[in-house]
Image (tube, rainbow, N blue to C red):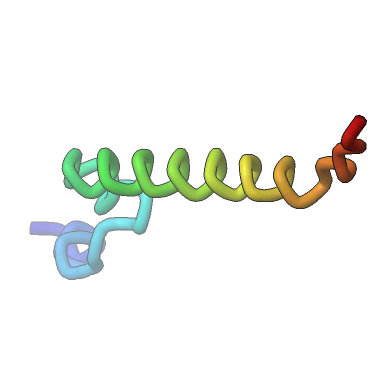
Amino acid sequence: MPPDRATTDETPPPLGQRLFDRPFLLLAAGLLVMLLFYTGWGLLEIALLPAGTLP
């Protein structure tokens, strides 16, 4: 076995590869980002609504 091959086997895979190896983690991250994004957007819209005038 060449020496460069032995050193590459001992190094951990990159972060992107570790994330793609766990599909349920990707699913949870996607749901979390979507939930936070749309919830934050909705709360911002509510906070920026002008006060309604009553007749």
